[in-house]
Image (cartoon, rainbow, N blue to C red):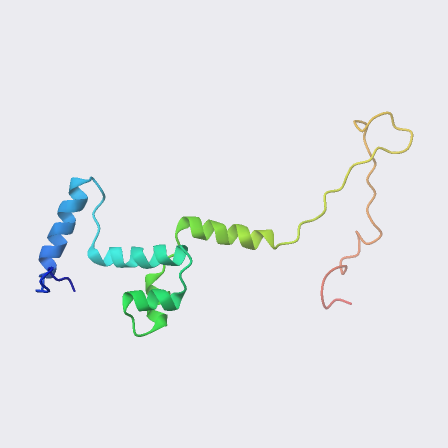
Length: 129
């Protein structure tokens, strides 16, 4: 609900018309007032506001409405979450290729032999042993 300074009611069409004038004046893409509400919730969420604070800001009765409908992950937040999750995945240690004894340089071929378990199809598979 929008009001004037004297607290008299503004008709929703007047507010929408004024918003359209503003975004056309500064050459922005069209946006609805309701889109601004979603955007405010998403930006607050990306800035670290918890869902309860966003729920209160929007005046929702239920936090489920806030979390399910009003908080879209921004691409920057989505990427940061993916990178944080990826950082928790253990990585294989890099193996150094060492030339065999007597070799002149590391550029010579190195014979790689499989480990004792390389041909064991059950190795590392749960429930097979």
